[in-house]
Length: 415
Image 1 (cartoon, rainbow, N blue to C red):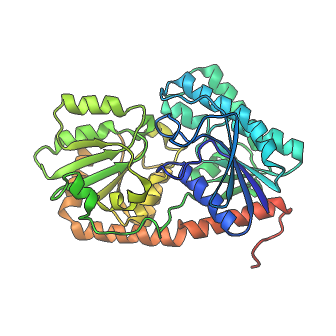
Image 2: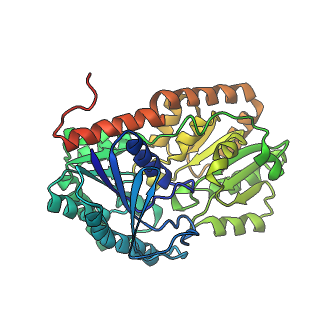
Image 3: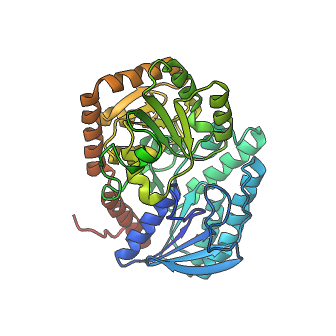
């Protein structure tokens, strides 16, 4: 089977959303499929092209069995709305010729966001007369509105129409959360055209490791009770609650919040933490992927957050990495969110609604006072990850779905 992916990010060196498409493409190539990805020069999360790459009109490389067709796009370290829009817009335009030069596939897959990339995929699928699968990682424009990126009613209406057009034209739609499926069903998308394949973590790469490790020692965290957040520090992360909770926990100097990542709100949070003298909050940049398992293992509690406005349109993929590391999860999320449902159903942590930092602080105290309960929650999370959200099983389901679309619903695996 010849598969072409359209994905803005493809950079296995970083801990980011790019890792999922990278793992999927490499696994499918290892299974004998011919896999190509039309993408841009790697630059996430700092908006600077990686060493060894150039932002050219067209370049091709083979990486772990995957053919990467990289095209030019506007790349900037500044994350303003218009610069982000220009990045996405230029990529969606150049992905058209990048996809054409990659060659006709048996099945085409585009990732959303960015939402306009679906228009490029639709055009390519129409030119080639091949099925197009729309992979939805966040519901747009709902997620962009929740993140504060979209506020103009006319622009929101335009993107809503764009999304509806894509839902109607895609041969199939792959979703990562049940809440997303309910959203599309409410928009009259037929259930038969929807697959629910969750985000995954690799239980062989991210595995339970000793808490006392090199990362802890390097960061001076020996003897600390570490509440660790690793991911994008953006509008939907509601990390302001962390500062208030840390203020509440000043009387427990052994408790330390460690926030790892980059994003639009990082500088403001750092400034606020300094102004308030919060020595129990530390900010670190993204860590190298080869140390990621060790970083997660250094936590006593893994923090995963989602603000109220994003409850129905986003599911932070970091929750699966936390489950793989066998650490209890403190989910700061609306009770009705997919994130809260997942954590409570798996029994792998506790949920606190956003904007309740006192409750968050109380829950941290309870975690600290109950190490056996923490260990049991971590064990249950790891067990659920292996059973339902492991890399191999999810890639199996994805391969089956693509095969059925490419070959008119012929099953790849016999029942």
